[in-house]
Length: 64
Image (cartoon, rainbow, N blue to C red):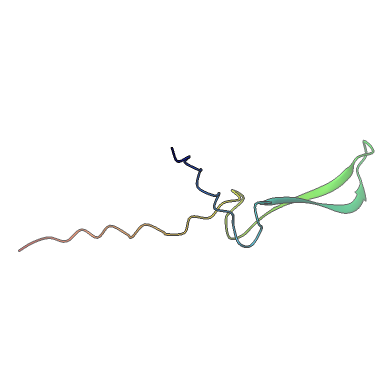
């Protein structure tokens, strides 16, 4: 009997599945921790996956 394999995940081509990165600014805060910036991927908006097809917009028209 054949085994079904799951579909491969659809990773974002820009971030390759690593959607958010932390960038150290080098600045020390008053409590001794470092200030960091969290930057999300602009293509997938931080989800890590990208759908291959976008749904078509729905257009409603009146029939005369």
